[in-house]
Length: 138
Image (cartoon, rainbow, N blue to C red; front, side, top):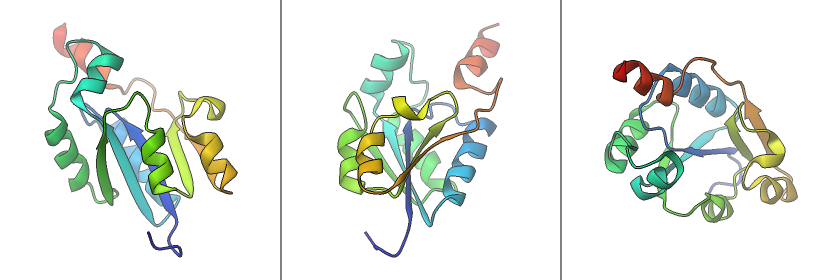
């Protein structure tokens, strides 16, 4: 990757894209020059969220994510955590949503050890995939 560019990295399921996701991704992108998003594969989403998830197939989620103007690169990962991808990308800034304390963010010690930053961005209360699914069910 270009050493003069600042790469921001985030990861997640991003199952049903909603305004909370969009605001979060725009805020993440504003921290650097390029935003890399690692998406959980369908298998890993089921492990994390249960057998009824994901709602959308991994390829559809990746295509939707790649269509966002604030996202520069999208990849899928099938491991329990995105640590291998983080080590491969070597981001300058690692971000997660505000419901993640910095000391619990996977890859934080790797990024900090390289002189990078780790940020927990503002959480959008009431805006989650789970709440959308619950609303649809009722």
